[in-house]
Image (tube, rainbow, N blue to C red):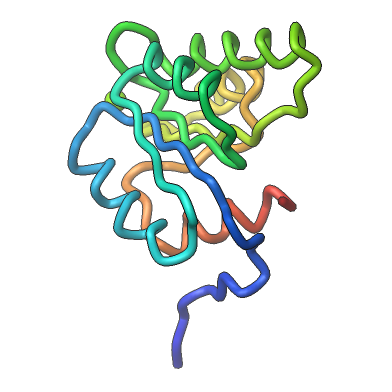
Length: 135
Ligand SMILES: [Mg+2]
């Protein structure tokens, strides 16, 4: 039996930014997301993530919490502040964390993220998270 979760109900033209400093994790995310997103963009640190967010329009940002220059929590706060200042509809932000402890989860949600994904993640984890966002 095929256990792969279906992506039929995903919005067409899904635009995704993945902020991740680990090249292997970035590649895995790319391989998983490519078949059903219309735009896959990437950033290697929090500063680049915030910059790309301001310059483009995304439906989802997958945000690694530990990145150089600016971590995922701080980048999320910058994005939420920018949205408030500019009356923008909040983009969905999903944390990617290796430490899915209760404290980390609370930090993610308190900084303005919508949900979190534990690393290492598989295709079905990512699909399930996207489904939970009700896009
Ligand atoms: Mg990292």
